[in-house]
Amino acid sequence: MTHQVHAFEPPERFVAGTVGPPGERTFFLQARGGGRLVSVALEKVQVSLLAEKLEELLSEAQRRFGVDLPEPVAAVGDNDPLDTPVDEEFRVGTLGLAFDVDTATVVIEAIAVGEAEVEVDLGEPDDDEDSDDEDEEPDDDLDRLRVRLTPEATRQFIERARRVVNAGRPPCPLCGQPLDPAGHLCPRHNGYHR
Image (cartoon, rainbow, N blue to C red; front, top):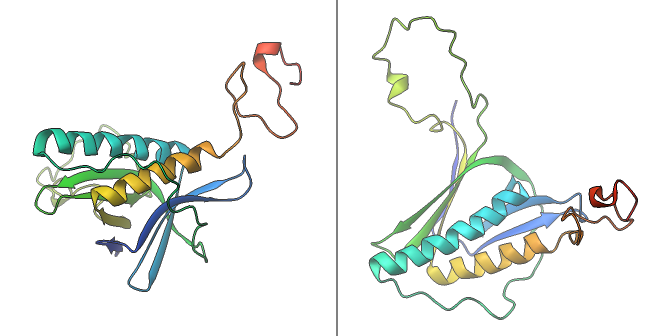
């Protein structure tokens, strides 16, 4: 089965965004460039971790390679909604990050969820131990989105991703669970409506 690699090196725009009301939001990474628009769906926690790990990657690149980093973005940058139409190409299962020293750019790769993430071993011996399947990466046949960003564009992405994650429902001050507009049943209040 063929797979697609959606490469944007660099994109005109690369952002994290959502569709839907708080509590029912679907998170997307969206890249635009060269007349193409690609949107991939992922979980809120993946967006949050991506922003955190990108910050760590930039710090490590500065420490190890002496890369000049821009200061964290203080002003509101790209706050526009996602470009339409928002058609999900695939759901992200794995995110990969790298720093290309030669071009001083950050590479982000979002790989689709595999059809069979886990293989079950039934304990039967494999007659063909020198199989070519062992040499292949397990996700080589999965769709992917690859984006190459400058450190400045990476900082802008991080800031927007954090704003998008924090724009959801506020947490309950007692239990930390998200508060719906009508409140929620707080476990710290023994199930009383808060």
